[in-house]
Length: 378
Image (cartoon, rainbow, N blue to C red; front, side):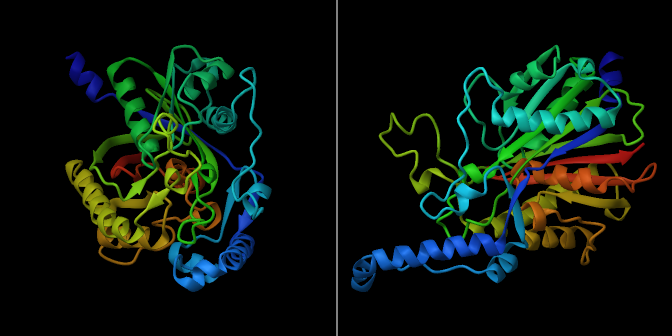
């Protein structure tokens, strides 16, 4: 039966890649810049603050950031523009249409490592899927640009499910291979999260960093680092608690694209309260459907947004506190890199797996959205 044969076809993740920007900002550097902005703002608006017309801004601290998130630093595409209190956003050079775009460039660097690790050539790849939170443009697709630069035949497209874009794009690649549409698919997740962040917001200015990841999925693989995909699962549930309102309709609506409400906004406490049980239940249900006990899972590669959130998800799943090996954290160095985070964790900590050991990649975020990919080392 062709359908049964396709459904039970083995699909492997045979290689992963990571691009990390050269520049990084420590909490101390970020706080110094932010607090100087606060001082200037409060001095310039003293009369309004004294009259009660507006509230004074409150300074931040490295301790506050570490306690609230677990983040200690973040990699960024441009450090100077972010720390410049007269600008407080990255300074990126606009590229001409004849130049490779910045997202494609990041994706290609990550892809080259993944291709090398998988032991294939780019010409062997049948499709490219670019999944990320903030696409550089509406069209042409960044994925098609990556396809061109790597000389890949077949097809390519972009998709966006915010921080869950990596697992959702892996699901699409998995389905394409299962259906016979492709044998080898490249998934890339380039994220310049610093570009959509309001660095004047005390509760959010520290959250994001920049990075790009890549994953190769294959029908068959001889790679020594390959993992078999045992199953994928996705879920979405609408919520306004994490939102980004920037878009091409801002100008037709006569709204200011540079306004803070067009950047990243979230209701952090509500997100924590609502997303933790959603993710825990999703992963538990997915494992149950595959008849896998949580005690058989060696590692949870969770979305890297908040340390306390990940610790609580893992604790609810395991029934105890997780250790560092069971739930690796990379957000202390990278901060929240949106869709790239769980893949960075997987990329950096999958090397000690031996045959038949099981791990779970799970990403979650705006939407709400949650995706899980359950893997077994071949």
